[in-house]
Amino acid sequence: MRALHPDPPYKKPPPYPENRFKPLTSNCDDMPTLFVDTQAPLDVLIGAAKYRIAAVTQVLENLAMRGTIECESFILSDFALLCAISLRDGCDVLEVVERRLRPQPQAVLVA
Image 1 (tube, helix red, strand yellow):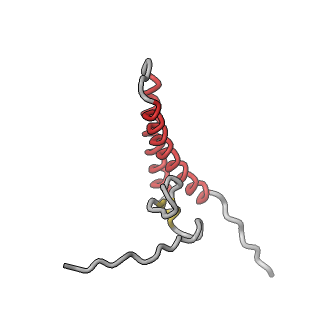
Image 2: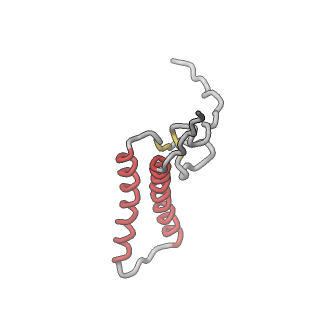
Image 3: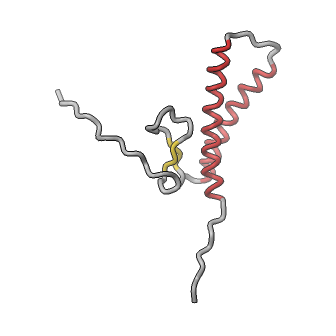
């Protein structure tokens, strides 16, 4: 049987945009485990954001079409958190797209 070795101490990644991988806001603690690849193709990033936002939109539209919704308040709270996480992930990805599409300042050449 192999001996188990503890993980090395956790090092926080450098802040975005210095780091290629941007932690999602929805990570549940100070040690992020979910990231956006800031160098992924723009169409892939937009597709990922659209997928998350569309999923929440579909669920909320279905709920809006129901007559009444009877449930405990803690169930609504959990449901709202579920929607918020997906929406926040989509917004994080769109933020990366926005940064990539923003014109970069041009370097000034000195003659």
